[in-house]
Structures are given as C-alpha cells and as structure tokens.
Image (cartoon, rainbow, N blue to C red; front, top):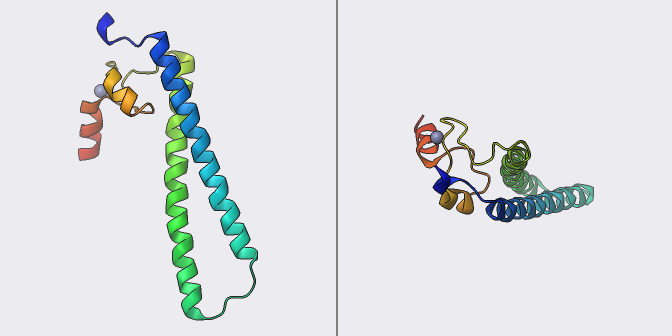
Length: 121
Ligand SMILES: [Zn+2]
C-alpha cells in the first residue's frame, strides 16, 4: 500500500498549488465584482437594446463567478482534508486517489472510478 501513499513533499507541493489557485480565484471574483459595481454606478441606460445586452453580460459574469465559487469551495475542502489527514482518500470508496490524478486535479474529491460513476448519474 506504501506505493500509493502521498509523501510530505507531494503534500506540500499540492498545498501550495491549491493555495495559489485559491488566491487567483479570489482575485478573479473581486475583479468581476468591482467591474460590476463600476458598471452599475455608471449612469443611465440608453435604450432597451443596450439594457438587454447588459443583462446578458451580467448573466455570463454570474455564471463565471458561480464556477469560481464552486472551485474555491472544492479547494477549501481539500485544504481542510489536508489539515485533518484525510486528503487523498476518495470520498466515495475511501481508496487512495492516485498521485497522478491529484497532481492534475489537487482538489479532486473522488478517485477517477467514482468520479466517472458520479458523472454518469
Ligand atoms: Zn473512489
């Protein structure tokens, strides 16, 4: 079983990766919020067509922000699991998630098999 266990070095590298990604996401979200506020503060709406375009734009931004929030949640959960020592265990079957998968997706909650099963549901 030792071959699949995560070394402290791996854990440190993954943790930095998660923290860095988390910071980038927060910066993204702050930029989106600031842009929105600046936009909303910016005067009258000229006509209906412009207004529709603005709503559409706001919706696209919302979808992006929601994605960011979702990813940030996963990252925070992963960091928490690192703290309590359950990081790298699949949330479904409890088997270790492969290092290859964690390197590609440090916030992965499930092993590849279980993730595929969940996505098929
Ligand atoms: Zn699993």
